[in-house]
Amino acid sequence: MREITYRDALKEALQEEMRRDERVILLGEDIADPFGSAYKVTLGLSPEFGTDRVIQTPISEQGFTGAAVGAAITGMRPVVEYMYIDFSTMAMDQIANQAAKIRYMSGGQAQVPVVFRTQGGPGRSSAAQHAQSLEAWFHHLPGLLVAMPSTPYDAKGLLKTAIRLDDPVMFVEQKLLYNVTGPVPEEDYTIPFGVADVKREGTDCTVVATSMAVVKALRAAELLEADGISVEVIDPRTLFPLDIDTITESVIKTSRLVVTHEAVERGGFAAEVVAQVSDKAFGYIDAPIQRVCAPSVPPPFARNMEDYTMVDEHKIADRVRQLVNGEI
Image (cartoon, rainbow, N blue to C red; front, side, top):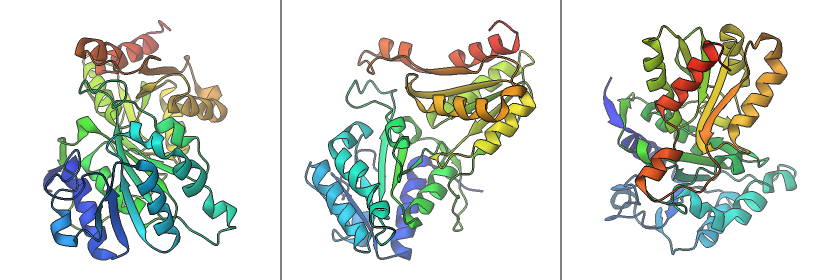
């Protein structure tokens, strides 16, 4: 199977869905050529589809998000791009009070098939306003679906599904993943929401990870294998809907759980996983459930300080090792 980058997988998903359905349009800042968006995901789409469908917007997240929600209600399938997840805060009313609520408030008479594409996370010294991980905010909103792909295969399949759904989707990418390569089929495929993927099988401890933390969890599993510790790594792929059954089945097998993500620990998505697993599999857990997440500080600009706050494979491996060895 061919291998392509995470960036190109996303671009293929957009291109194929725009060819398949003329109702699919793109809106965002600098998304048309020659810039092709901040991380070049949309480069090359405006020459093919024109600026009527690849719509270059002013720097007004409130404005173009509102326009996209209105377009979705009236039959279009917009894909909005926010350069950074931090900038989505400018459009929280349109996302939280309009897109996520209209289907419910209209008794199902109106649908809002809109995708909000964005990226977050640290790793490039982007500092406090360009490197946050805010997915938990959106996970908390009834009426909004949340996807966080970690591989090119998942990125393409989940984005195609998101575009075809009749509900609003927050689609969260990670800036360090865009150049990562992986196998992606050339034929059409989609990945259903609410189906986790076991990225690595193991018997001693379950590690649930999202986005870039999946990459680091897999590296941690390699480190731990040298110590004779077998780690199962699960990527939920979508935060909502959440495939808690796959996670619970794994914890019943391994009897230990570590949840990791790049967002701060306080109020993060990991807490929801911990709560649900405790409800469903408490009697099978042999050690305290652990979270490996960022501390409650804004992302620093200085690279050494940013590195200190980031989740990495060594922090994950150390916590798993302590858990398996009975040190926690």
